[in-house]
Length: 86
Image (cartoon, rainbow, N blue to C red; front, top):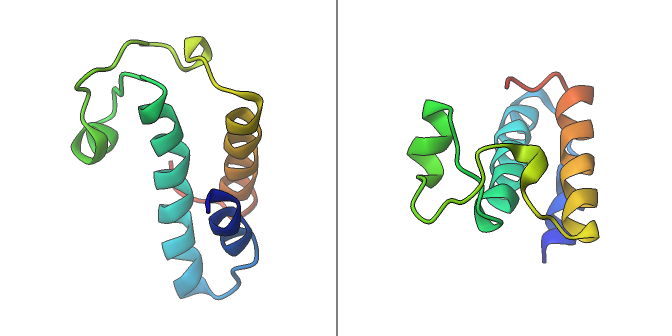
């Protein structure tokens, strides 16, 4: 399921779709961190995901599987390539 979403994100092209895809890439990337126990610090992420049950204040300490690390890297590359807002 997730792989299909990432593929969809990577093939988007129009400006309107790009804004939505940037938002989706941000959401999917942060969802991975939320599910792994990250404690968010930005108002946007806290509003979206909350911090209930979080365990890790630093992203580099969040234990991610290789598959999750790869997905995060792909999403970050998409965000950089398309100059998505942070």
